[in-house]
Length: 325
Image 1 (cartoon, rainbow, N blue to C red):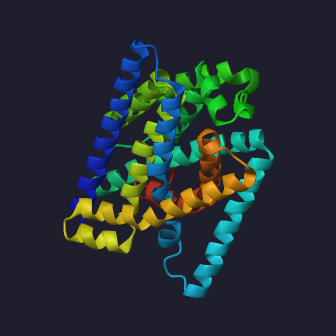
Image 2 (cartoon, rainbow, N blue to C red):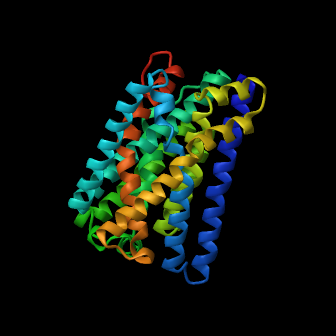
Image 3 (cartoon, rainbow, N blue to C red):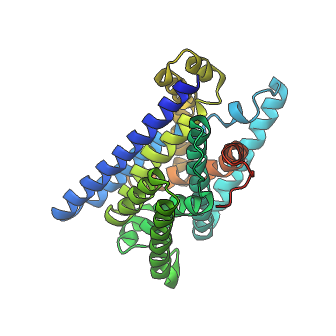
């Protein structure tokens, strides 16, 4: 079973790297040709959001698997109530809601990515100390802050919602330069600690954030890095997937984890369209904004529920039960 889990996690790590590398090369090619039209960037972002939706749709299975049907119903009502309140809050205060989601997402991404590494470390019995805190900061904030504070961010955010264009105000250049510095320092730290694989991961994320248009950077990171690695971790927890790992079938285990979240994909898309129609949106123009709002709202309970799983993974690879380097 452990061999199957290691093989899956290592394959997902390699595949997510290839996806990011492809995004970097594609961005450089289009940069040489004059840039990727904003319309295509929006399409890529929509595809990435769609691909990433299932990864957060099985929280009830891994977080509260032993709930009786009545308690599960109450749990789902509470879960959806939080989502509903979050949607209302974001639509009522676009700018503040966006700023809070940026912070929450960066923290969630960083902790989740570090937990993925910790899961692999534990199974491989890696004795090399993993500097978790700098990795969490760099891996979570690099793909979020840098694309949103660079010189191309205004055009991208204008396509999402014009109110968000000046989300960082006058400190945007400081955020950009500060995050690049932190990312570079974290890469050097990983090299000093002989965590070469983590240095490669952070380097790829930094280069993608620097060379790809904001929506493209988001598309490749969210759909083919964060969601992919998180789904791999889900296969270690979902009972039907763990049974397949016991049989030495890692890809089948991953497929079962993906399939568990597929129904939510159609529910989220249908709900987004209905919400947009109620709000009077134009399908082609406002779909990205409303889909983002729904996914951001889902992130609130998703982040809270997966935090327990993340902390367990982070502690399992640290004899001192600490996330500090």
